[in-house]
Length: 515
Image 1 (cartoon, rainbow, N blue to C red):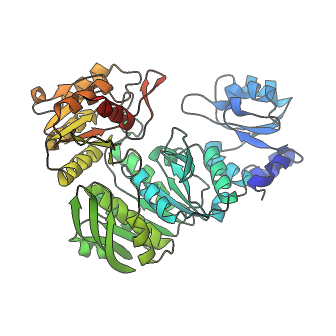
Image 2 (cartoon, helix red, strand yellow; image 1 turned 90 degrees about the horizontal axis):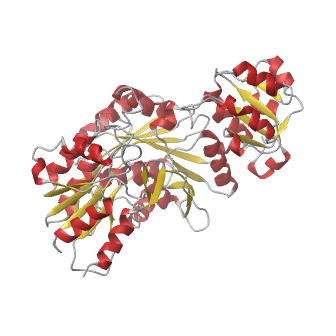
Image 3 (cartoon, rainbow, N blue to C red; image 1 turned 180 degrees about the horizontal axis):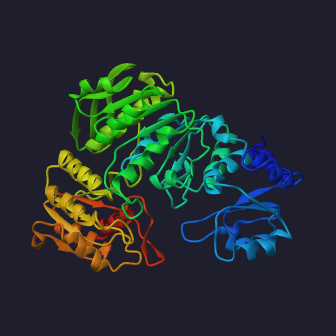
């Protein structure tokens, strides 16, 4: 197989399509070399292969003429679209056009072959679940990272190395980007890569042909009901990660009902590691081959002290992280580290030094001690918001203010549930805008407020900066403010426009400007 290093010489099209087309079509490919891959006609280069598959809204074939004009050496396609035959007649006399059955599901395999099957040269840890993917991924990556060999990461905060991430805007990028990034990571000499795997990515085949070694499951809660028809469909998408060929181990949250079901499905097919933040979870050992659990947990404003029991050792993990849910995240990370072959004592020592992930239960640092403590978190599902609110209650004693909104053009059914989660724990709730996209912010707010039992007790402010400012002005120095929903995001999406906005920096600037 070609490696990423020598792709400029081209890869034989027969090598990319072997076993995916019949012998007659394969024979037609002989002598054709491709130097790049593209699903987007705007990214086609001279000598490239244009992959024309059905997208979410349009079919790639309608851009085939432009792809040929940009220098495509060949086109692979499948499916149907308006003017299909006309388009193929127009381009097939200029470049080779090959129909590949189930092309969408095979893009990952084509890309993997093009880049020399990079995931087979790495220890790949995939993480799926509704909440916690980013925190678990970055915790594992920080622990695996060393000064001479960095750990690769693909996920919500970007792709690349833990110390040098490049945002993609997606939790799981498309199959071409996934394989290209894996090739770069492998070529740089890395041994490990940690990948967040979304339900969209699994459902759309973006990680097909990735050779996962370990799969981690965090939890299953309500989210993405605008995409998945039912909760069962959502669960089935997550389940796909645990049916990947060659998977050696599963790390599963046994405090989650679907997690216990998933563990039962995996038994006998791979090594199953379960983890639990419940000190009374010893009876869960019958569900798995190996159990990692918290024997006790204590929380303070400085962080967490977790007494851990595992098949590889017993000890204490002290971390400067906030939130009971971070106990689960730490246990998931510890389990994955032990699966990777790290010694228990080494794993515990490295976890002591874990830094909070940007925008995940992160305290806003300022020089002021006369204003409320401010916490930024990405919580954007009812379960995640409830967990973040519980965590604030565990770590802080003052009055609790919660600022949040809900994204537009996304699952509307969770909006009143978010209100219920905030009202259950916070003393004061301020409902504002998140990323309204193409919806009216006031309409979104109205749907959120419908979930309150006592709507008259809570405050609404569509302007997110003004909402944060209001909380800072009203809260006392011993109080705590949770700003939830956007976390690490650097912009607010209004219509199709991305307006610069980061909760952490906005809060920091407002605090510094206070008299």
